[in-house]
Image 1 (tube, rainbow, N blue to C red):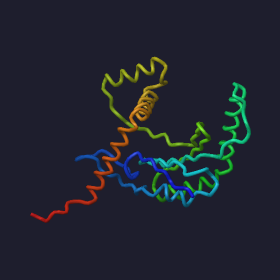
Image 2 (cartoon, rainbow, N blue to C red):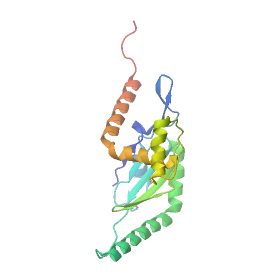
Image 3 (tube, rainbow, N blue to C red):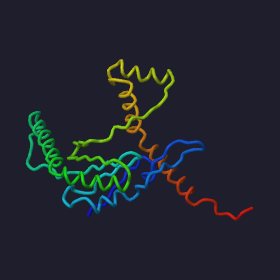
Image 4 (cartoon, rainbow, N blue to C red):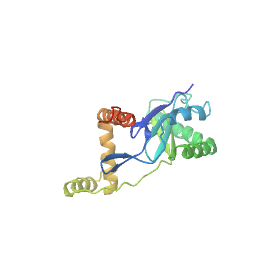
Length: 203
């Protein structure tokens, strides 16, 4: 039996946006039960266990582990290349053979949660994502921040300021997992307190 594992961009998978007076909840349905819904909806046998389900305000990403490859591959450059090719082929086969059913599941989930759905598959350390959303995010940067981005571009680390900003965000995510987790927990607590509202008597 699959038990869904949920990763959230914000607590509860609910959209948020900055507004006057603090963070305001966007007009999006909650996605707290997305992993559980997918647990019941996904066909048995697709994945070896529970897929990873990541939710933010725009997208639900579902990544599952495929069965391991059969057979042995030599621990040589040629053997490692053969294994990589076999893994790529297995993931490609899963993508093609499940396409129509994945489209139907995505259609239902998009109707239920008002978010796009993307898929991915993993074998060991190799993971491939299918048609994930690339969402533009507008921001204003002062000169010191622009210089950082331009340095990344000039050094060849990134192809453009947009790529440099995406690289920087990814780097922060990799090295600040604990802090981001604590921040999400704090935001979840704020949501709980806001939902309870004032309970004291009127003055």
